[in-house]
Image (cartoon, rainbow, N blue to C red; front, side, top):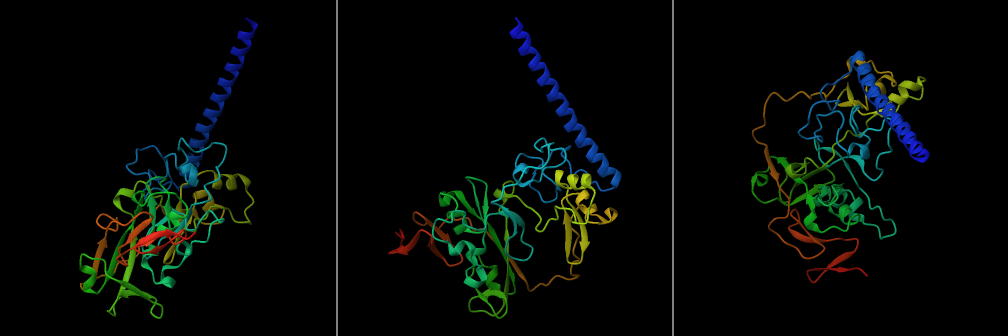
Length: 340
């Protein structure tokens, strides 16, 4: 009987500890958000999880509520997955990167080959403009793991995944060339003297912008490059420094063409920004008063539906050909054969 009472006492003690921790965590959430409101820095409903969200990955939100927020350290102050004991170290393999093209999204992606014991995959880490290879600028998202890669070759050298599980992003072309308005993706080349792409055989610039396909909009994780997540070295208040690290509720401050983004209002304060000038969304850029009617804008869906290549190959709609994984294989007699 004594043994039963001992076990019961232990269970009751553990339950009391659990209740105290839970209540403390909830109080901490409410107290922190109340402090943000008192600062006049709230971005309700985009900086909390009180209302249901149609797509948690939408860039309009200033933080995330879903389980994946732990991987990227982007949890809202009241996300059920945020640790009340401090931030969890985010995943190191995916970094916030700009995709190719002006106005293209900023997303968490992998832009290198993790396994350095294998031969270096030059096409993964190469500059598309230096290589004159537009296919290299197209991000790829794995439907198997949900991870996004800089391009197809980065995906292949990091995952043992079939090409049918790798979704290539869409591309939008803008320019004065009527060729752009056709149904076939035109041949493009890069002019290093003009710092611009153009259609082969023509002399008009073409602007390339990659876009996230609709099917991936709930998978791809958007972000803000150069997000300021630490306090100034001159800041001395430890409690504010801890709050800066505790949660995500990003805010922006206008700075010319680009904004300064901070992880949360406390990060802005400990970098000596006047919180009354904070904004909850990206500052709008003034639009041109007229529309250039000579510009063609065309979106090309690059998912390989029609052209089928062999094993370990991918179809390049820019080059109109099948390509091998250059790290492990080369093209020989129309097939990809192992280098070894």
